[in-house]
Length: 286
Ligand SMILES: Nc1ncnc2c1ncn2[C@@H]1O[C@H](COP(=O)(O)OP(=O)(O)OP(=O)(O)O)[C@@H](O)[C@H]1O
Ligand SMILES: O=P(O)(O)OC[C@H]1O[C@H](OP(=O)(O)OP(=O)(O)O)[C@H](O)[C@@H]1O
Ligand SMILES: [Mg+2]
Image 1 (cartoon, rainbow, N blue to C red):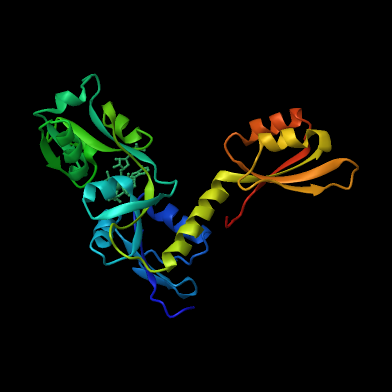
Image 2 (image 1 turned 180 degrees about the horizontal axis):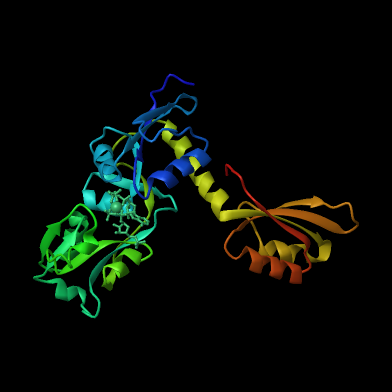
């Protein structure tokens, strides 16, 4: 390891992002804590130190320059107002931040004016309402916001929605467009100079995303059909074409997007490809 200082990375300690964030870091080759009570963990081989913090607080630590980078939700980053920016989306912890009211209310966003709105994300909500010139009374709650209307503390809520199960259980219905479409993101301080180690982290995380979103495809094809099959599946940098031990045939290896891979197999077969194989990627560095 070099003598450069450790890169300080904030990771959610609890909640919806904690487990998938640790799993993604493990898939990227980093050590992760095995005891959920550990507050920090040093991975000296990779020159990084992990700090396990509440997802809501992570943007604050990053924005104030006490940690280098962190994983949190886009909605929490925007809500915090911290001087931190998104570096990359991480493909998990997807949710939408939405308005909801009792079933049958049929409200529009304009109807929120003058009402009591319960939320755990006052910064995000205020910015949205201000932009539209809507004035409402904010009722700030810590969680379980869906119960606020039944208990009489609010008229509408603005909250995180994933499957919609919690809203449905509370007898609420969505209205208006999504205030924010969120997922887990890697963030950094807006104007800070980051240690060189951060480039390695970005490369490793990108590689995990590629390994999740791409498959390796192998097929054999006769020379006269090669150009057509390559056009159908051009790969990232271009396919590897090798000679097959069969006269006039080539073996092709190419990365293909996971989405639509089976449809692509059908098209390649129609174009003359044979022995088409799809293989999961365990890891990669592009
Ligand atoms: N059910 C869910 N599915 C997907 N993402 C979610 C879900 N609930 C929350 N999130 C997202 O995860 C991030 C962190 O939310 P989380 O609920 O874990 O934090 P919290 O509300 O502060 O903590 P807790 O709920 O443990 O008190 C947010 O970006 C949020 O949008
Ligand atoms: O649409 P769903 O799939 O039902 O998920 C959305 C719910 O999940 C989160 O709750 P969480 O468990 O984090 O509790 P909290 O409200 O106390 O934060 C969020 O605040 C919603 O209540
Ligand atoms: Mg929550």
